[in-house]
Length: 428
Ligand SMILES: *Cc1c(COP(=O)(O)O)cnc(C)c1O
Image 1 (tube, rainbow, N blue to C red):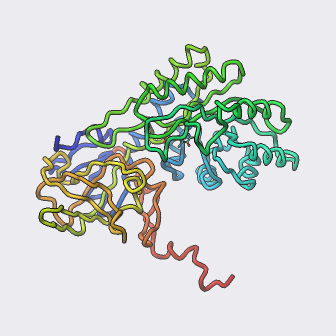
Image 2 (image 1 turned 90 degrees about the vertical axis):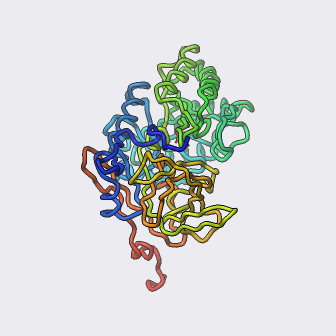
Image 3 (image 1 turned 60 degrees about the horizontal axis):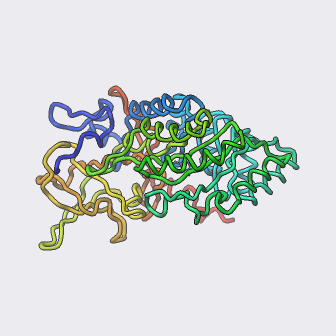
């Protein structure tokens, strides 16, 4: 198939009379002119629809948005206003979420190596839950409570020994993992007993997260059942089954919907009678397909008998996933999003690495030319959030669009931003 499947675009995507792609009623050429490229364009209705689907499936206070997938204050506000709780995994993520006006009581702190400062910040703010990941962390919590901080509600993170079918770097539920307490070797039970016996922790539940970008509902169901069996006799109010639902990035992929994923998890827990305690922590499945990235084509080079290169004005600094995981994407042109794409090309960025590839084997319309606006769909998760300033390339702006109205939620960086933390002439 050489035409971009419409289902990879945000929900409100459509085509203007002259063929230009619009999202949220806004033409991508207008957005590119106003905010520059590269540009992340998020469909706010799409974001809200995924939040609502998750809440309808699991219940209110049962869905925790994993902010690491994409975070700025506007995103925190969207998730919070739709009734989601927010999962943060560092002091920095907590800071941004609190700065958006989200109460600490709606935040859950994760992390396999939370610092004393991060724990102190979260406990004094009064976060809803700490998801405890290690015995060392328990020592730190006990010391902080001894200092006078309030006793936190905690979940114990368990690695259930279920290997998710995904990239090794984002599989987290297997026995050989840096995360959590191992179920098979008895550490998970020891952690539960220690938390129950500690006067510095109020144990409210157990947690697992088997990995990210998982497509197979069966893997989730197996982990859910293992966790449900572990959790049932503990009789605690919370059983958190993590996130990890995959999304389709390319034409050949199909992913379960949030509600189908929910059925798999809830059915597995129903067998053990614990489905009423289940919460989840979706990240990618809320935000990934809500956004597209718009780039400008800068140079094109044909090496006969080898390949054609098309270079755009971003790259691994705004989307490191192809470099990190070999992830695939689709590409199309903003002016002709559903044109036939007979031309094979490798789409690369502007960084000083041969590995700076966005699409190793892209297909594009035959008349693609320098100056065209090139669009990569499904870039809403782990693109902006994993971005960098490599080569001192400026991080792109982020806009939310809805009903023909655009709101800039993150401005493009400036050269002066690059010097904001550089203390060369300020001495020590
Ligand atoms: C990353 C992460 C998530 C979200 O994963 P997605 O694949 O984006 O849904 C949820 N919970 C924990 C603990 C995580 O580390």
